[in-house]
Image 1 (cartoon, helix red, strand yellow):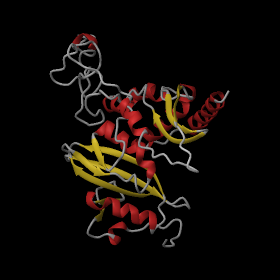
Image 2 (cartoon, helix red, strand yellow):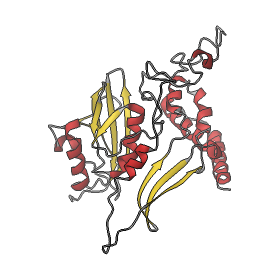
Image 3 (cartoon, one colour):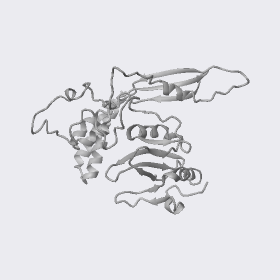
Image 4 (tube, helix red, strand yellow):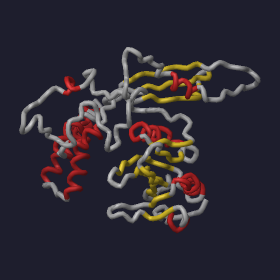
Length: 324
């Protein structure tokens, strides 16, 4: 592996001039990598330059420029800043990007989340299933043009509330009274339900058994959970046991996913505060504080010193009671 200082960032555009260019958009940084070269570039980053940790993979929908973007943040575990690179593809279906699961296995759940919420497929991913929405969900809710069944307007307050005051319950405006979209021509009388667990257990079966000492052993599938760990939403793990050893595991999450991100697109900045509190109701002060810091930075605001002290004290009190 090539030795570099912990703080030195490499110039991807210089290393791969035919496949990488600097992101020169105003306010942006990092590099844009061609879809065809992203696996080879990522492999070299890991093997030659020591970027052994991919901390996050995120999807972005730039509807104005008609493109999707997948953003990667790679780090050296020995230290240093993030190396940010992106893949851009046309905003049309099928939207597809090569999976990096063979380079950084930790992308597994994050690529599934991007597929679920943005509809970007990751070719080569061995288990590309929905992860937050349920298996029968229609559409990909983080796309900018996706609209839920209760949709009224892009921004709040809705005119039906103010100033017109002609409010009508959203449940009364939908076919089945729920905030759910159905495929065109959907008929509940002719619908045949499928087993939502089938894909999960099929993914677990991909584990290859090994016989030790010529003795064939049975494996047991055990469901752990759903559990309720510390915050809204429950977690379930399905494991394959060889004796007392876990040899395969699939996490199941998203039972209470509310898509605060989509709600936030249509709120004013002030209307988002109740939602930050509910991300973790035992430690709501810190969530609201983090959101406040982002708003202050965007607006270029400097809060009074007294306010800084108060929210530090309240945040610490909230943190302490969260552990009690």
